[in-house]
Length: 269
Image (cartoon, rainbow, N blue to C red; front, side, top):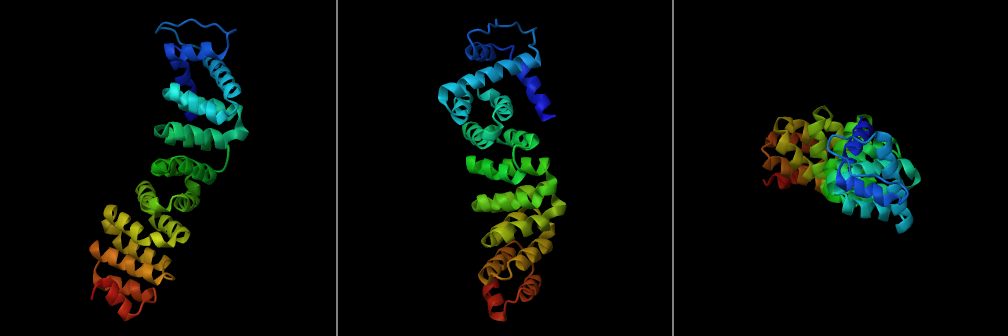
């Protein structure tokens, strides 16, 4: 569906003067006149012009990544359709294409990730890692697009995303839990197993949007962090500030193996 929309969009955009300029620049032997608003160029013709234009840019820059960056700078509204063509034309250069496209046009990150996953240029987790490295601040858009495209790989998406951008672990877990509220435990478990020290931040982020799930959230966090004594104490303190009862927190702490002194210290007693 995404490919169909992209191709149709390219056909419509071909009627615009900006796209005509792209086509004329692609080859001096191909002539095209600016079309009126009532004319729509055929999909295969628009594909031909975009492919020719891309190939010429690659020849000039000697790099598909530099070509993508240059095109994105001049025609930002066409970046997704250009990536579509690029991934078909240079599939072995998918890393360079995705990285360059997202770096040049971060606002199109979600669409580019969906397109790359749909085309199966690599595994979903690999695409997630590449996209996050290209633009770390758009990590939420990356994981959201990946989870929608391949929900069966949710655990691996969480693991790779948190390992790639641990500072955004709380946001990653919060974003995915909102989309998959019945998978909170699985999402938390994957995140904490990957990067144990983010437990307190994950708990704080989840309790902010799921206050009624406090017991599940805190119990899971404490269980998965049981081998990290200091981390469990910070989780308990965070949960206490979020309004979880001391009685419950003591219960979770004891199950994690904390002694009475540790519990009192964590809860400020």
